[in-house]
Image (cartoon, rainbow, N blue to C red; front, side, top):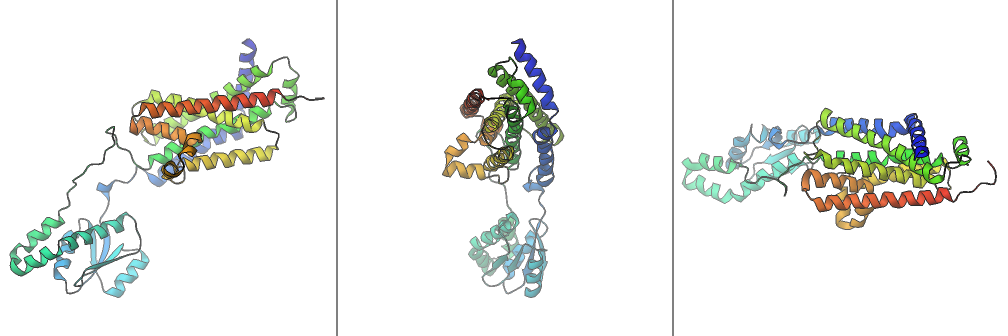
Length: 372
């Protein structure tokens, strides 16, 4: 035990001096999280959205024009233009759509985003009540303003909530995947530690191999030292995201710790497994970078819905992807409030860590050298 603790202390000091590994484990996630926040902010608030700019090309449909003008300053920022002016403004992007007040009203848009969808909804709403509006204009002209006001009165009839009663911005999925990526970047430290136990990789490893310490003590001390540094890096990231950037992770902070612990250990064990292979250093780094980025992408780091797409088409990939497991565990805590799902993610992460560590130990232990 005393030997293992001494080896642990030495390995801990060495890992703290590895500036390259610390950059990927600590600084890079902090920088990426800041860039995400600068891009996404606090998410989209529909109540604070400005009116959608649109053009109105006048025609014979006076009722439709009155309907649109009643929405001006609320949901629309309406400008009357000629057909040529409207098309030019649409190409320049200064407006999002063109309403044509013809006998049959039409709409032209140049995209399919939220603002264009609002314009399409307005047109659909009018078309649904068109016959009623025409009938009122013919027989009860005095009631036309009240009818227009009635169909223009958009009330919020539904409320979006989760099963647990919690809500979440869609952009938070990127930060959950970011934490998964940060845990996986512990693989760089794990790979360095594994190479420092192979005599053909470095002078330090050669000295260790001739020492009286057994291989199991070396593997345990190296892994625990890497895990300690990586876990602290992930904790710093969590604190930064929550208290500096204001990204919420729910109220059950204690349940986050097992996810960060097992996630960090899984990342380190992946690195030790790759580092134990008989391939060149450059190849090992290439495999680690590629694997970390691909798994982070599949967890939703670059495209937020990717994890859901995989869940529908090939769910087994989400069960063997540590980044997806980590992100899903955060979902289980913050949104779903599903202890069974949370525990399943932790069990898979733990099993993955034990398996990869055992294989790494076996590969390192069976190494023999004719001379050092």
